[in-house]
Image (cartoon, rainbow, N blue to C red; front, side, top):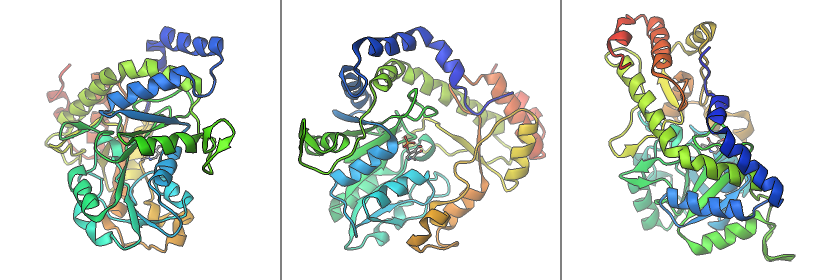
Length: 377
Ligand SMILES: Cc1ncc(COP(=O)(O)O)c(C=O)c1O
């Protein structure tokens, strides 16, 4: 059996440190926020090339509060992509704004910046590019357009911890950058977690209030806020795991490079890592027009895969009220029909990559010899 992700083996590799971190919280009883969360905020902000981190309970909350801190209100428009996890668009909905979609570039699965400016109206307040699968969106043109048009940029980097754009980390480019620490993410909590990273002290002040009932100090509520605080146990666990993140990212990149070599010269469409990017491979998605058959056949051989995501948000029933219809974002729609995420996690071995690649090449009707010839082990 080759799992899609393997959280258990990662836990076992760091068990003494994680267990001690959790016990530490039980001893201090700093169950919500507290010194471990505060230390993690500083460490993760620095890791992300920025200065301030505001830890919250989920990536969705990070997006929600960033939009509020940016001043996005009911009736405003926020530009994003339809090919993303639903949370990106739900957060825009939470603040009463309308999500305006721009199609993706079919090679990178991130916002097609050539279509961005045409989507801006008098009501546009913010742009939310999504660094999908672990590769940053094309941030320079997005920031340039936003600066010229007076818009706030909130990067959805929920899948892109440690990703880089032209040598700059996700976290150091946009006005605010949102991360998720959902357990399966590249940096995953043992529960839920999220963070907004920013270099802007005013945004950070607002975010800190909003996550804790809008309070400036205890019981002095100056904003209508939320209970979005990060738990102490998550902060403590994430501090331990952050020390391993670079190694885990290197392992993901090594596994991705191995897959790339195994599929080279075949008809299998592999992810395109742009020259501007350090892709951190949260997801390694190939494309096939026979996805369902391939997914079933792989599972029958003990290989788990995933689909990220089968329906673009503009075609989800939940967002029918936005009034979009099939055919409006053809690259997102085609990708949603074809992408198939292969097993990808730091502990994935070269032999497992080879087994997966052999199975996929067989399905593609290609000779598995390509796989063995490319073996590095
Ligand atoms: C692109 C994207 N945005 C937002 C989220 C929401 O994060 P969370 O699940 O922590 O709320 C996720 C992950 O689930 C995501 O992948």
